[in-house]
Length: 74
Image 1 (cartoon, rainbow, N blue to C red):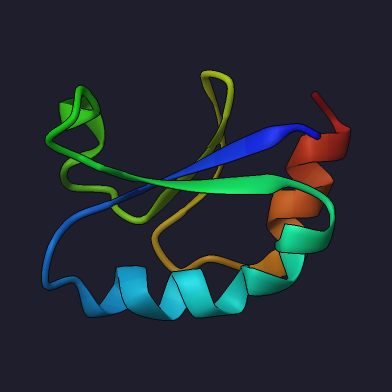
Image 2 (cartoon, one colour):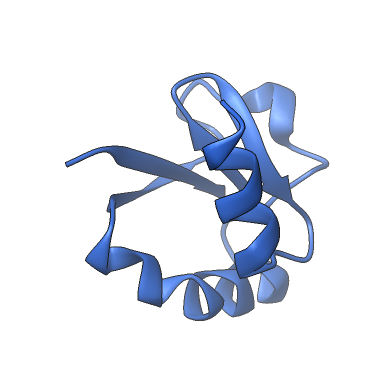
């Protein structure tokens, strides 16, 4: 199963809302929540960020359709 990384930071309401929105993707992907401080500092001002390998699928206010659309186009 393919893995999506979700880059988040502590005390981030937008990150919490984003994680709730993409829970349905658990049926299709392994979702791994990673902290921005664990080597993802370049995304500090863009969290939450959904990554597949090194490709950004969505960032900020996450939407299911944008994530899936961008995944298909890779």
